[in-house]
Amino acid sequence: MKRRDFLKISGAGALALACAPKQRPVEEPAQMQYRTNPNNGDKTSLLGYGCMRWPMVKGENGKERIDQEAVNEMVAYAMDHGINYYDTSPVYLQGQSEMATGEALKPYPRDSYYLATKLSNFGDTSPEGSRRMFEESLKNLHTDYIDYYLLHSLGANGRRSYQARYVDNGIVSWLLEQKRLGRIRNIGFSFHGPQENFDALMALHDSGEMHWDFVMIEMNYVDWNHADTRRNTNASYLYAELDKREIPVMVMEPLLGGRLAKVPADIADRMKQREPDKSVASWAFRFVGSHPRIQCLLSGMASMDPLIENCETFSHFQALTAEEMDFLEEMARRMKEYPLVGCTDCKYCMPCPWGIDIPGIFQHYNHCVTEGTYAQSAEQKRYHQLKKAYLTSYDKAVPTVRQADHCIGCGACLPHCPQSIPIPTELRRIATYIEKLKQDRL
Image (cartoon, rainbow, N blue to C red; front, side):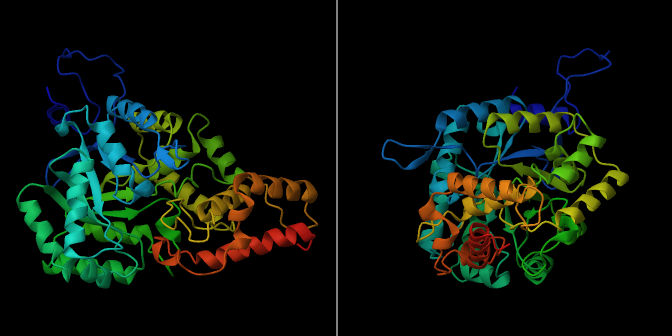
């Protein structure tokens, strides 16, 4: 029996073996949670694999390449444990993600998993370039069709971006033709941006100008009601708008770039008091999965440990109660009190033309803030110890020539950040903080 046929027979709840006797044991083996797409009947695993963070190693030429052996091992584990949705892009990991994903999935029947990739035509919007990107995706992924094809990151400029990248060049019409031919099964878009841009994209759907089969949004318990609305939209609004139109929702950043797996110590303690046997990350995953319109949420599992843990969470999935939702709202408010940079480590800003390790700087800074190793003032208890620890760990995490004080403010990174972070401003803030640390001027 093929895997997709098996999933269709099994349903979205706990999966029973086809040959199981009618008298089932009291406790059945845990199985991955699935959601049925009401529009096409697809049964996708609630946990999907985000292929933006495959592990990297140094190649013989000194350049970074994806560790294909590790990817193969993780995909094998994922497939064995019921993950059947894989999301990638031509631009992820210096253009290597699609090839690595396709190679890892090649041994499995094509109808045993769903593929999602994107038309990431940021630099070349020509019809020839866009068509070539689609054809190369098919080649890289060893397939003749894409299940879920996304117009990549339409949020920053909304309707203008859609018009310039997909309409004026005739690509939307071409994509719809590919869908008619069966080379694309579903067309949607991914979104980071202000509400008015999202509303404009929904207006296309409402008018019939463009039918969205699905939409991918950033959603987690912090962004639910506490997104930076100068640059983004509360996920509660995005979800409600998609829900009322009955558009299936795919979710990115359920862990907010990993920050909700490593929350500040006081928040982690409160979570552990309530659920000693559950991970901090499981709270965030359960929050997203508790919303019924969610078709699939993505996790960029870069090693076996989070993969195993997340499969466990979604094989014993428990939706949150109303009281637990209120608890996470309180935790979200507490999270917003910390002076964190809103970086999700997507690396879209890289490479910096001046060699600055932008995500590395932000990730180190955020880690120190959440771990409580952030020196705030000379009057602080253990100030000198914290100061030394920060400066030492910073030099280890980021080479001197790639640190924040080398940023010249050219702004080349700004158009690429899906979170619309004022990157040069944040780098200057961190560089100033470090200089004050060195001079004991905090």
